[in-house]
Length: 392
Image 1 (spheres, one colour):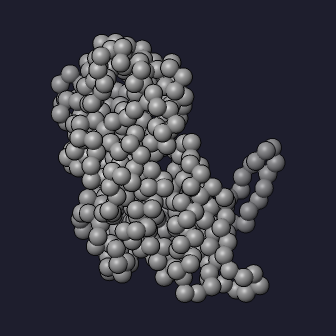
Image 2 (cartoon, helix red, strand yellow):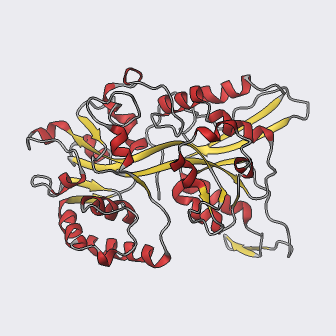
Image 3 (cartoon, one colour):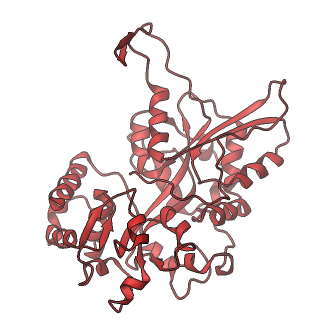
C-alpha cells in the first residue's frame, strides 16, 4: 500500500536530524527512521528532557512507508558482484550484510507480513514479557494486529512484531458546493453509486481498497477470501467504474480542490490536514465501516535491543504523549486519551477520536471497520486480476 504523507503541518518533525548531547564524548545513541510527519518534534524534545543520561538522538524522517520498507530490505542484502552505470564492481564473496543504521523504523501494518517473511525485522520480545509499562493499556485489537507467526499471519500464539503508535482510516472527502447541487451529502459507500456522480469521482489505485469498499457496501468483509462467491461483486464494480474519473493513490486531492472532481476516496492522514484550509471540502467515515491502517515501530534484524529504544516505544504510549501525537499529527492513537471535541477543529471532528462528534457515533463506526489483513497468494492474485479487469 502506497500510503504517503501529504501537505504536512509546521508542527511535525521536518528536519533530517535532531542531535542532543555534548560532542567529544562517546554517548549512548538512539537512531530512528520514521515516516515524515508521524511524530511531532515537540514529542522528541520532551523525550530527551526526561532522559537521565547523556544521549545522542538521531531521528530521520522519510517521505513514504514504501521507502522505509526498501531501506529494511537494503540493510539485509548481501553485497554481490554487480554491474552499475556501465562498469563492474567486485565485492568479496561472503562479505557480511550491511549493519542496520536505525534502532527503530516506522512501518505500516500492511507491510508487516512481508517484513516478517523476508526476515527484515525481529520480534519485540520485551512486549511478551510485559517489560513495557503501557502495553497493557492497548486495546486487544491492537495486540492482535501485531501478534503474528513466523509467516507474518495473525496468530494468538505468535510473537509481537511491532508497536502501533498512531492510526487512521480510509474516508470519503467531497466538495460541499458541488454536492449541494445534487441535494445530498455522502454518509456511506453506497453513495458512490448515486446518479449525478458519473465521471466525478477519484478512487485510490489499490485493489484492496476499491474492492474492499464494494464488499463493505454488499455487507461483506474487506478481507473476503473467495471473491467468486460474492454475488454481483463484478457487476457492482463495473457500475462503480463508470462513476470514476481516474484512479490515483497520490494525486487525488488537487483535482478535488480545483473542482475537477466532486468526491474522492483517500487516507485520513492525507485528507485531515487540508480540511481547515479549504472550507468547501468536508469528509466523512462511511457508516457501514471502513479500512483502518496503523503506523508501527519495528526493530530491524541485526539490532540489539536496548533500554533506550524500549523507552521510546513506551514513551509514545504514555497517555499525555499519545494525546500530543494525535492532535499535532491529526491522527488517532491506539492509547485511550482524554481528547474531547473542544480539542479538535470542527472540520476534523468526524474523523478523529473525541467524546462528541456532532452526532456521529465514531466508536460504533470503528467497531464495524477492519484492518487489511494478509490474504493468501491466490486470493491476492484474484483481487489484482478483478481490479485490472474492471478498469479496462
